[in-house]
Structures are given as structure tokens and as C-alpha cells.
Picture 1 (cartoon, rainbow over the protein chains, first blue to last red):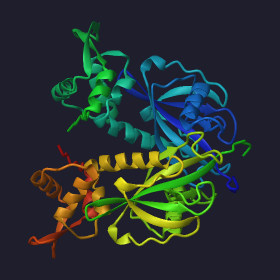
Picture 2 (cartoon, rainbow over the protein chains, first blue to last red; picture 1 turned 90 degrees about the horizontal axis):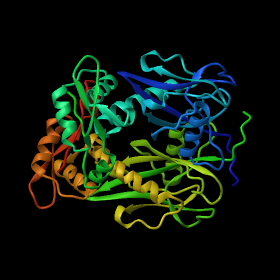
Picture 3 (cartoon, chains in turn orange, yellow; picture 1 turned 180 degrees about the horizontal axis):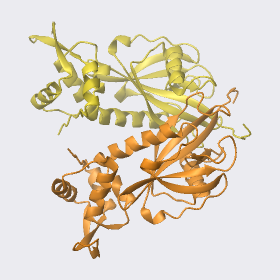
Picture 4 (cartoon, one colour; picture 1 turned 180 degrees about the vertical axis):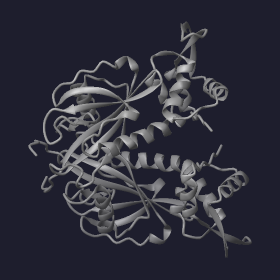
Length: 229
Length: 229
């Protein structure tokens, strides 16, 4: 192809993790280059023969030893001066992991990989703070119209954990009774036979998310919607 | 930058136009290359020193003589084999134009530019049908939670035009009374002093969308939401 173009293509990922009332973001410390020893989002250049989705999955595996249950495209960042080394356009992804995957393993371009509390992020390189801010907005918005909260919880959880997750991410109190009633009304949450002792209270029943049921409902035009006033 | 990468970056745009109960998409006929004389979405390679937004605006101007009121990123298409000439990743945009801009002027890479009825699209080159399908879904979804319908109407319009627009794009009947009540309840539609004779009926009042009011409401947490059962 006779096209003169001097633009490189990268992928970057904002991966959220949730554990006991706290929301985390995964960052890696750059091993090389102009941002050496700075914290940045995991990511890197796309290989010629891999799709964008494959590229971001590979980078997460290489730089943090992480495989992610939920990944979707967030936005493509293409400002001319976003990277001092030259023109780099980055396809940013948005990911959620369950809390059992909190063991990280840095390698290749990353010297460290670490979960940071959302409120306590270090200064990050490039325009990655913009990417993180957009991902936060997307996460808050999606909680209202897609059952993505379950990707941040273990397979089985007490109902109060789901409630705390919404409260934590949205940063506000929620009407517990209405929330529970609404959540259970969809028919996509199942009671298991198991119970778990949480804190000093009564043992709580464990629930699990029935994704198959959700997919079936979707085909029939079902709309997941949680409104929190 | 020492990165070996053989990937080109392009932008493509799905631009919707609406006129009297019909929804249109803008296509251009390729003047050169392997898809010569085929209809495709307007678009092309990004220049080294322009942002992605600037690239898509430039391509629309060059290939169709069109400036678009509403443009947003849709999705980035990066499958390895989407272009037979080599690896091309395309950042797809989603655009809406008001019906006064139906005069097109093809130039540069396009030998023709034309509006096609959504139900009567020709076979399009590359993976552009996938891009169009995604844009249609985005448009239908957005009508429910963002007042984008107004970008497809003239500045002043009879209320029935807005109703027809929703009916046309969503492809279903809507409850007229509820729709009108809900739309007017937001306070973002203003009655003008003008009236217009539509068909054989009584002259109808003209309305206009108050975007400034909408932006103010947004800051206060206002949620535009139209539910059509």
C-alpha cells in the first residue's frame, strides 16, 4: 500500500478490581523509555498479525500476568501530541476482573504491576489520567444498565457485597430495600444453598449471577436497569 | 521510535440524514484502488499531524462536501484481514446531519457521493456493512437516552416530525400521547411563535430544541430518557 504515514498503534487497558468495599485500578511501572519508573496503564504496541482484542489480552498477560473476564473497547485516543516520542494512537480498553485474580506478575516492559486504590492513584504517564477518568465514567454509567457488577465479584457472594459494590463505585448511599427488590426481580440472580458468616451478623445466603438466563432474557428484549436516586 | 509495525490508520464515518419519514446513510463511490466504483463509507487515512476528529471532518468535507453537526467515535475496527491491501485499522465515527445539508459534492478519492435509504443500501466494500450495522444499533439506543434526534431535524419543526423521526428510526409505532407528554416535560423543547401547514391538517406550531438549557440541566444531574414500550 502506497501510504506515507508515520503513526504507531497501541492498546492500553484500564482494569478495575473490587475487593471488600474498595475499587482498584491496575498500573504497571515502565521498565524502559522516557517514562522509565513511572506508573502507567498496562499496554503496548499492536503486532502486525494480531487483532486489537488479542493485543490487549497479550499485554495484560505479559505485563501483569493477568487474564481478564470482561474487556471491551473504551475509546481511541489520537491527539497528535499525546506521546513525546512520536505519534502514537492508542485504542483504550475497559476491563473488570474478579477479586480472585489479585495475584500479579510483572514482566517484559513492566518492572512492577500493582493494584492502586482509585482514590490514591500516583501520577501516571502520558495522557493515561484522561483514559482512567473516562473509564471511571463508563463504569459508573454501565452499572445502571448492564449487569457488569458481577464481573467484579466472586462467583458466589452475599447480597450485601453487591450492594456495597454499587455504593462504593457510585460513591453514594443507596436505598437498600428498593435495590434488593429490583435486583431480585430480574430473575438473573440465584440463591445458592450456601451461607457465609459476614462480620458479626447472621450468616448470609450466597447468591450467584446466572449469565445464561441473562443472555436468554436479552434476546427477548429484556432491559437491565437499576435506578438509584 | 524503534517500533517495527506495518499497520496503517484510517477513519470512516457513518453519517445519518433524516428527511420526511426516511432515514438515509451517506456513501461515496471509490475512485481508485481495489474497490474502484464500489460504494463505501466516506473516510481515509489519517495524516501524521491531524487528530482523529480532524481527520474524519476533513474526509467528509473532501469526499462529500459535507460538514456534520454531530460526530462521535463509534468503535475501532482492527481485524487483521479487514483490508486485502494490508493491515488497516479504522476508527469509525457516527454522525448526524440536519436535512438542510443534503447537497453533496464528491471530490478527491470519491467519484460520487450519495444518500441511500437505510433499507436500500447497495453492497458496500471492506467490512463497512459491519460498521453500518453497529452505527444503526448505536443510533437506536441513543434515541432513548440522549436528545440526538434534534440533530437530524431542522432548527424549527412541528412536533409530529419528532414523533415520526422516532417511529422511523425505531421501526415501530409509539404511544403518541405519552411520547408528547414526556418530551415536553423535560423543558428542553421550546414553542416558537411560528406555525407551519403540514399536509391537509391544521397548521402546526413549530418547536425548537434548547441545547443550552439541556447542557445546564445535565450539570445538575438531569437524565434524558425516553421509554417506548
